[in-house]
Image (tube, rainbow, N blue to C red; front, side, top):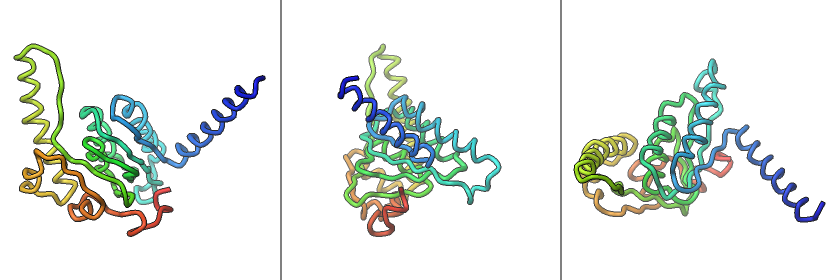
Length: 203
């Protein structure tokens, strides 16, 4: 067998063992754009851990840790993750390891406990949309997104932070980037790694 093929098999087995270890220890990764894959992976495993934990008191369950580095993505798929986290009886801790933007930020907010690397970033902004259809159908879609969906998102963000309606409305039409200290001041961040706790708490 050629040396390159042996190395490829070795690398595959090595990475596969790491992935298996992470899943056994309930460590999940959301790295990249949010799409249907998050339903296949993140939602699946959160539900699976809840099935495993049936009969165990919530206080004694081993938490799930979700590491997030995402620029955002699909609202529908993102809310699928959010609902699963919120209804999970097994605690789900969210960790911003680099960037939680747009829908990535909303998923982060769902965490039972929320951690933040000291040089990570957040972005909160209004949603974006794109579609091709008849004018009447596009109007229906826009009315749904700008009235129902935006109202739902606003209420969700205010329920998970200290952001009030006045501040939310002020920031609605801007690209609101912020770092750990501001994140703590608005109630979006519970723990800054290196200040409030050590890295061992999230590994």
